[in-house]
Image (cartoon, rainbow, N blue to C red; front, side, top):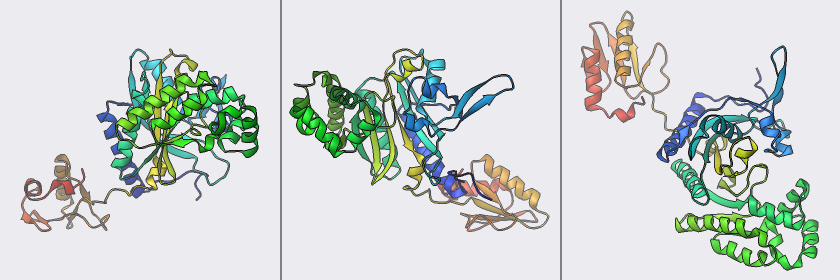
Length: 401
């Protein structure tokens, strides 16, 4: 029997790997002072359209339908993005807070151009409402890198700035989406046309090849652009402050001014995280999104880690099978009582009526008497003695609770 196109079943080993990643993400978020939320799978379509928050290309790939109740209906979507629902929740429930730090682990749904694309993806996301630059961006980058490094990856950080990119393109008269995509993809004919119209800007127009690894790169870029385009001063200075703080923390990065395409709501710094050639996360500043959705003018920024992609790179936890409990005929009541005693003490124990899941850490056989025969430990007369022997003579870390 076939699955729906683009969907994936998670087998027990997949779920163990998923929880392994999720648990480490949750732990780091809690250490940084973030609180967990969960938003509904269904959201009103106008959240994503009326304010122009997503690009037309992305909106063409969402699952939308009429939520009909027999009398009236409104068009809804299966959430294609985690940030916009989190902002809606913040506006309706938490806007009284001066600064709000939230995180979530949720699925998002959209479809691509081919039938082989994954249509359900899991995001481990973080949002900061009220956080100002550069501290908020550096906080989020630090958190994301801690999570990825804690999973055994060696992430590469790439930085861009949508405010700088948009301001520059506006000054150049490049406003159509198609032209912007061509420019960031280094279209030769468009570059030639721009160089002929603004020869004083030189190589600064080659956005796809503008890359650096220090605040000095941005200072040099400013020395070329600002004499001719003074409106770029604020985004360049903001970008430089973020890069400078990261440099002072010995955090390596690559500056790439072509980042940030695909989300209309980004207004400032954007950051992508790579492991090799695989992009495992990304985010950025979206200062206009909260007022666009009806809230106050509150600055905000966030990121999402792509759990599906991380699962392909991170090995799952080493499988530890629980203690197995077997019983002779007529002794199953005693066996279930023993299992209950172990569970009450935080010791994982598997009841085995047939073949066990795998090689157990320790096996216990219950026989008439009653006698509890534990491998490597000898015989015991009661469940309490078995549990005591386990706690006293065996490293409980080997038994997953």
